[in-house]
Image 1 (cartoon, rainbow, N blue to C red):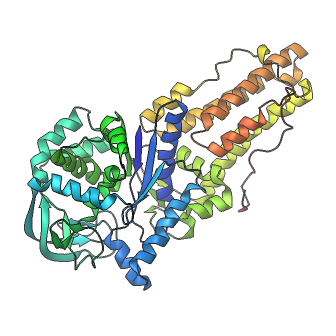
Image 2: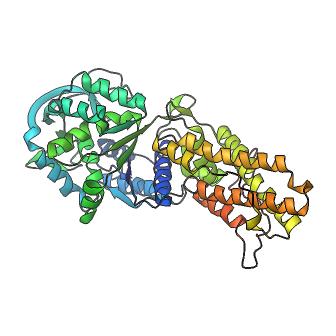
Image 3: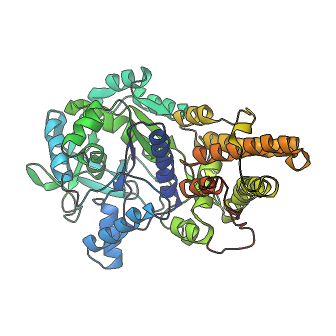
Length: 477
């Protein structure tokens, strides 16, 4: 499976919304690797946006300095968020990106033409709108623009796109987003501008082949990253031969990925993606979290304060498949304490304590009961439907099932033979949890696995708390 995220602008440091998409992609990648499937997980940054140029002007620093600094912050999320991406592309410095964009431009030249254009431009969205205000909530007024641009004949691809989406060859999840795209395409497609003047771009970006007075429109440039990052044999392996090519994105950019990008590829005669998975927004007090939301939305600061398990778990357990999710630190703390400290952590600590108390730390594996502590298919089905909350809830249900088993069997009140059966069964449940939890919370899963792994003498380690309770404390954990 080839899994990609969108590549964000680097006009500022990353926020929690970026973390959501990266963590979702990471769960998919880890899940499919665990099932023995080949996976390439790719992310990166969109360095060529006009927003980056304007941010550098505001700061009074060279564009390259700002872009390098902020792109490093995005790539640096790997450690704090426990990410496992295989490739990170920066569109301003990747050795194959510019040449790849030029090749796609040439391959689509039969659908490109020059035209004078006047419209209202949103710098925040990097796109034109017929009227204001910006539908995505950017507060800056739309800017009137009048210039000659290159246009792409998107109108030619209406019927082909409808066939792809209706026939399922281009799968869009969830269904509400699929229906949104179908309605947009069915209403008719206008040709779109795919360049801007080099003067308006301040000379930053990729020049249009054969027309140095224009630069390639930032979305055309950015969308190409999914193939330009694939160098050498990687292109054949992951874009031509790979049967599952999945893009993850927020709902605000679905039109670019589900309409413009497939049309570009159809025009260029290249293979198409197979899946488009769309998440909604994170909000704070009802407003979409953005790069200007402040420190409360800084994923690294949140990890420093509460730990990576708490941050990842909130993003996976609380964010719905459809609908925005309002974030507060109080909700993050409450979810971590309830599920991780009081649920999973308490279960493992309780089981290991009883094994040492009643069985001298040894687990007679052959004695365990055939309790069906299995959730693999439930997790897989949920992730196939791009439902991370349902998948995380399936793992949490296993914790609750094991805790109910403790209360039902009451190992401390059983005779020795019964204690062996009950505790061996519970250790098996904890080991199963460690396996199932790994895609969601890799570091925490490793701690759970270590807590119930017997040493050379067949004994479990002494019990230690796995998760600190966070309520009332903003301490690094």
